[in-house]
Length: 464
Image (cartoon, rainbow, N blue to C red; front, side, top):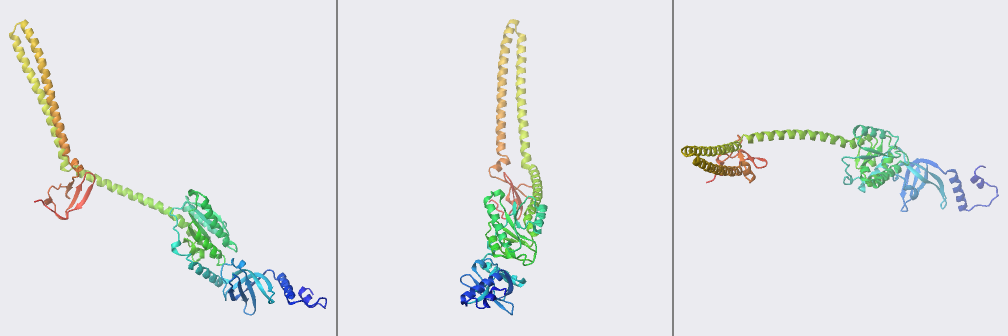
């Protein structure tokens, strides 16, 4: 016979009887050698999670049942908690429990089978993490308004990478893209995605401010529920939530919701939408600056027109027209007085010269010569004195004019305004000198030393 077990059982007396323990041990060896790596599908019944951390349950197909155990060292890798009625696919090896002579499957991996099983696993993980507050809105971080560098965690061969790069190249070329490659499908994909997020955070801790990643996009294109399952793993959700870098989740199509979407700071319905969100800030600021520039130009034009109108109004005000005219009159009067003083001096000199000539004609040549010399000297002295007197008079007049101009300047409306006074005008431009000229509700324009106030009369009080 080919089977060692059967050969032993039907041996013709060449060996003595075995003990129960020996038989069970031999059966165990034979089973483990023959069924060292098997796949079995069935429905879970009698599930029990022991205090030791081990899982005990049975698999049934409705007609037959086999016991199974998944030890603590293996079940921590399983992404959902089994429950009765859940259809699963089990990989493991067949062995026996020698103490009772029962055979069972030692489970090494456990996967839900079908969309219904995946939905159950999804709800289990979602409920557990929600109870911990992992999805609370208070824990969401705001995205940077103007990101300079974006980390992209996806497959380097997937369509998601191409879509994101295309949009960013078209809309936001100033933003740098740093790819952190990872698997996005398969048994090891969840671990790789979590490790990629951790690597991005470690990169930020080692880089300077200018080279740090501002936001992470984690995602992939569409696929079946099994294809997207890596983004439902609990470890991925916890790493997203603990990331120091804000995370945008962009998994599958708009209808696909994953645990990663719930844990992320922002969910984008597709990878392309995630790129649009990141590039949106740059487009918005360009539009904002354009609109702001146009508003500033319009405001400047309005202010300039208002200033010109105000300047023209002030220039036509009587108080500013009368003051220059008065100065011109004073200047003309000073010039007239100076001209009159010089005319008086000249007339006096001519009179003295004529008298001297008449006297000289009656004197002898010798005496005349002496008298003329004396007269000439006297005339020179008189002329000098008159000149000095005239200049003194002119200086006195100039000083008087300067004093008058200084007094006028001190009485100038602009000087008055500097001392805290103001000029109040009615709507028609008339200067308000008496409260009786205004009425309640009148619009008033109050001119200060610097600026203008538009007001409305609410109460009229008259002196006396």
